Length: 291
Image (cartoon, rainbow, N blue to C red; front, side, top):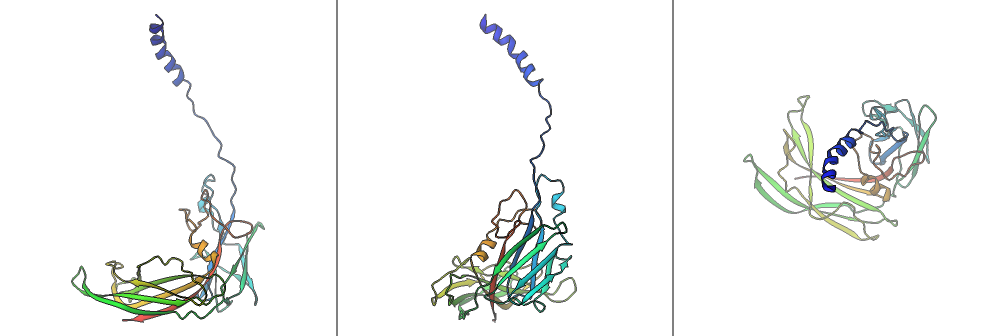
């Protein structure tokens, strides 16, 4: 009898449970936009370019569309004075040519940004000292191959060698690329593209004791061709020198929040005061080889 009653009441109980469902309105958690200041600068680049904007909290409607601060004020100051950077709408950046304000190796610069309401964010960039590196590139092997369209191409193995003559703990990166030329660009003029060379060992960040030579290899063993471009015999190699901030900047996880890598809820490292963002500097050497 007890079993019979339990079976009879089971459907009634299910009806009671599901009949109690109703929509609930849950308010989103309280959140606030933060200022973002971000820049990777070098005395060896033609322009100074700084990003200044807002974060994009996911719980604020259309926040990703209101990240720009075109009416903000961005100032850079250093040993030789200061300069206000104008806003460049085409790039959503505050930029200036180094012919108007020159960055110096070994110096430290303060970048301060202020929005119309008075909120301010600031950060510092310190550049390494420029020391002789004996940076050199040489060809150690080459082969001729026939590619997919029946044309022959040369494949090279390059050895890159440089010396760490910095007394501080400097970090280095090496990049090499093969230049490609297209005859069919938008303006009907020859255009250039590049393809990164392959590394035979991990050369993301290289570090050695002062006075020690560091060696690595790069090659163009790839069938990748930029669309509509033909490979040339020109190769370009870069040696970048930075510090821990230079390394941390490149390891920041970028979210899908447009140009702002500090869109919430992604948590990123930051080295600025008054908001989020990262500031870093580097030096650059360049070698061009024509084969």
